[in-house]
Image (spheres, rainbow, N blue to C red):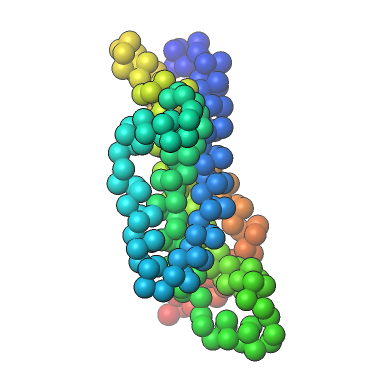
Length: 222
């Protein structure tokens, strides 16, 4: 505890750097996953190739990816852009398949009814399909959020500032309190961002709460 109190400014700077890498990656993942998933839905037989290919991104070792990306992007190996891009790719590996499944789960009868009412394809997607698939997409985004916060620490091995520095520096100097502070701060940040995703989902998809409530009541009375 004494070590933590004596190093609060340093922990705060690592935390800020961690947030500035994790949050843009989470947002980019969400913004990219939806159009990619929609495109995959329209690929027919090739859709499995795209979805499986996205999933395989998660199999790429993180350190190898952090080394390869500077060559592809023309950035320095310690540039935070590399970390953000790598985290976005890992996020897409998780969220693209989840978004495809969420869009597939939308009742076709609802879509047919919307079409019969004269709603165009683009408007139907944004006003019918996406809102109905929203709760499942938010659930997938929660997994991405926690995973991204954890993976951000890997960049510290290459010298990119984040809460991972507390791990590497703590191991090198044999300071257990520093290592524990890094683990605790990373876990708390993951819980905080996950909570924000939940609150954002409830604010943007209020009907999801209203539809779950009767189901829960029915389960309790059965």
